[in-house]
Length: 537
Image (tube, rainbow, N blue to C red; front, side, top):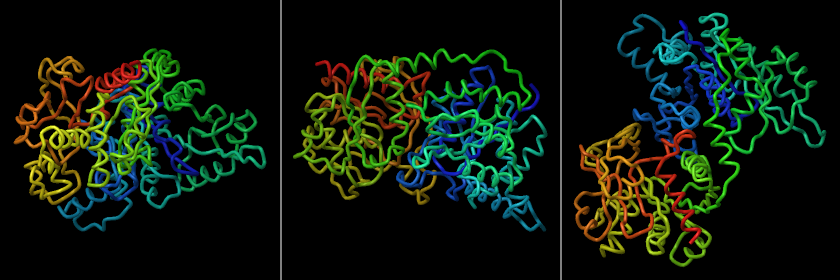
């Protein structure tokens, strides 16, 4: 195949319709037909990346192997396709403008007035084609963040218009995702918002090739014909996207609607073989027919917003299916946990996960949760800050260092068992300066970590500034908190565990980022298995 083909996914009427899920589902179907497919996301905000955004603003910040802090939609792409993404798969307006301004300062536009068109749009078009020009992909799907008509999205929409024109017929198509609201008072679905959304897109010079309609109710043939007529698309290109019980049903729903067939036809590509979704459907079957149920307490400080822990929640879905277990994740706000109410809060909980996070708020509640799990022999799993809390808890309550803390919470602590990393001490810029991306970890034999991974060398993704202070490792090991995984280059402790506990493990990295439908993460799989065992007892 000579030329990479491009699919652009835009959204209308309202945000949060699930452009990322539609893009990932289509990519899954194309991949299952034998096409090398990737997805990229263009975000219209001025931050260079979401790394400095509060999770309440933007949900979790997803991290790639190469250390890019990205939009959480990239997590969906990886979970669906089982293919790693990179720095190139997420671009923001901030990154685009920064690049153009740096070029202007270097004198690359000498004598020219630098403008949105052509300079910004050219930069966007270059980024849109970057993955396609690598020769690694047959089809590149690009999701445009925001909603058509937003002032922030205008340069992206104009770039898509130009690129569709540049690439020529059958080489690029536009899928427009829109909402068909149901008015209960009238008892009917309304197409007017979609018509206006498509009109707004056409005023920008773009004709939608395929219309994907989010709906709570089935679209009648009459309604599809009306949409086709007024939105200037073929009737078979009006695709229904009805609400599903899980996002993992969406590829099958899109297959039934023929989304992949219509897209391939418009791109002038052969259908190839029928999609091979055997692994996917085995996962779905296990997900829908669990043999066990467990309640896992997710102890965090952003629990009001589910997207803050998106990858963790999805990893529980993958690992639950692997164990044929329904995992009920019970969100417990760490700010409201204390010694008086903890037994009541945890009375129906089978296992505890202490989640990642930053800052002082809710810290003592996390430490109390670690202590409860340790003393009551409850399966415990700590991630990043959760692992650091387990070190502080053990130092205080087993080693007897009552003042033990992290310098993130108390820079005057007499026992900084968690400390700012050496290379972070002179860092002043906050954006993109943490320890990020995939790092090596050597696992010691005869440990729980080795039992879980079955190998001595692993690579996991990081996102932190503080680390377990090496000065305290020997004393804590003597007291029973084992350092079972260490970075061979820095000596940084990556994994801690307690031997005489049924299941107690803390990791400095973020295993949730690497869990996919095809490869559920072994830490989550084993943690859920331990929860099942604990419940049976």
